[in-house]
Image (cartoon, rainbow, N blue to C red):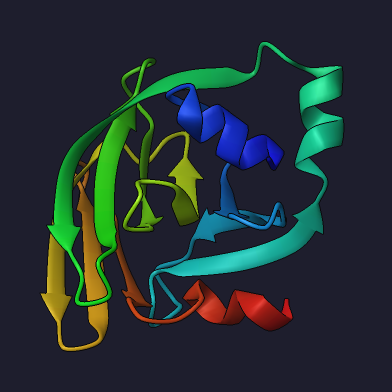
Length: 143
C-alpha cells in the first residue's frame, strides 16, 4: 500500500499542498487563477520522506460530498481538521483514491459540478478548480 493510500484509509491527508496519485506519486500543487484550470502542478516530491521527517504533519479529513461517475467511481470533496484546508479528488468504486488534491488554505471544498467530461470543484472561499473527470488530472501522468 502506498503512503497516500494508507493515510486515506486512516481518514488523513498530508498537510502539504499537493496532488497525490494512488500509485504513490506526489506533486506540489498551487491555486493559480491565471491557469484555465485554476491550479498548477509543480515539482514531484517523495511523500514517504516527508512523512518520515514530519509524521505529525497530517490532518484528519472528512469527505462532505460525493458525485458518482459512470465508471463506478466517485468525485469527492471535503475538509480537514484545522478548518482552513480542503481537498477534492477522484475515488475508485471501492472508495480507494485515484487522485486527490489537498490545499491547506483554500478552505473546505464543498461543491462538485460535472459538465460532460469536466469536473469543477469549488471551495467555501471561492477557489474554483476544473479538471477532466475521466483522466489523470492536470496532465500528471507525464509530470
